Image (tube, rainbow, N blue to C red; front, side, top):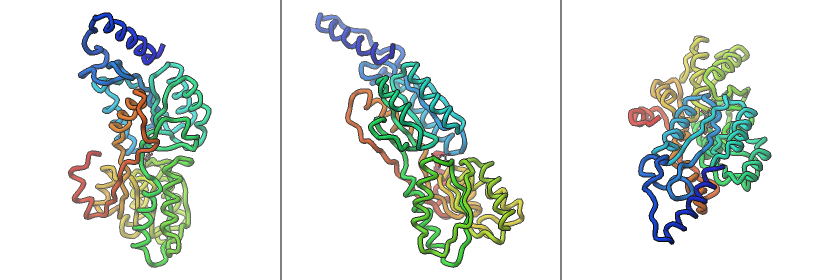
Length: 333
Ligand code: GZL
């Protein structure tokens, strides 16, 4: 039986005891910390199943750390964590397992946008609210309580606007795409393409590197074999990790990243920002991974029956080399 049902029964019991002039004990020992406002009320521990994409990038590690920090016992949570190794079927299976375990709430960072309708309906039928963090899904928004994340299309647009400003001569560009079917890959491509419309930047090739450093390196090796270092002026990588892999491939080919071949990426994780300071990446648009605190706040609000916004977008910024030099020392990730 789910903790939420138990806590409701306990709450009825407490009300009955209070009415009879009795008092109840202190904090729920399971709640940890001040036994504050865990659960739907009364301080019970909230059991949350978190279906993470995997551990594909530096961004993902920072996001996982932020989520585990926020969904701690001290904050009134028991976290059941699953990383699906970038496998959409495994991630859906993990959500089904959370439903069968009768958790109080489910948080998902969906690897891909499609294929979520059935399992989200099952969660709703089981009266378990679903909160999306980071990426979004194409399923009806009636099937999840709320989403907290980033504006991927705007990130792509910012990257494209910088490219349009800085590449005014005929420019041959290759793209390292994120995970096929994922919201960030789809939206970052759309935002960037719209921003370079009508400019002399020509996309000569585009392929997924699955948001990983190895993926970015092997795809870039293929592009270099196909076009030669002289045949590529610009790389647009949907995340820093693929951009860092491209740097390895470009250097192995005897070219200079950031000079012979310019690189634009998205995320602004520490390794990417260091490459920007070192002049190997030329521009980075941030994608803030620190979503844990907001996600935990939303879980508690939803369980307490409060009205919540359907979408909460966390602000991002962008960095050129000078801005990165200034920001790097104080970066949290
Ligand atoms: C974006 C996030 C993406 C990052 C990648 O919010 O989903 O997934 O840009 C990560 O680094 O793998």
